[in-house]
Length: 72
Image 1 (cartoon, one colour):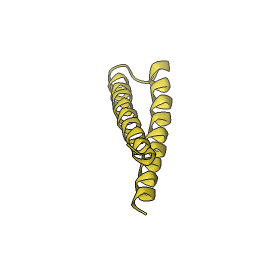
Image 2 (cartoon, helix red, strand yellow; image 1 turned 90 degrees about the vertical axis):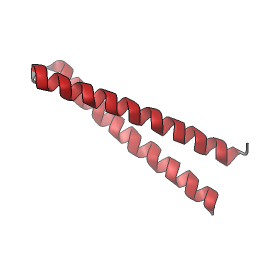
Image 3 (spheres, one colour; image 1 turned 45 degrees about the vertical axis):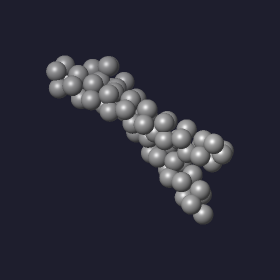
């Protein structure tokens, strides 16, 4: 498999894992917030969810950019 396709597979896999982790952490944070209210675990979950959301956006951008480079 040529190098560009390996990079595309890498970013696709990384995006899927980051997106799944984002959904799990943000869902757990929302559930904890609805049951216990605001506490240190909820605040930590919000911060981690924000970081994961940014990482999902970045990996999605890199994945799309690699696909566009391959098509050119």
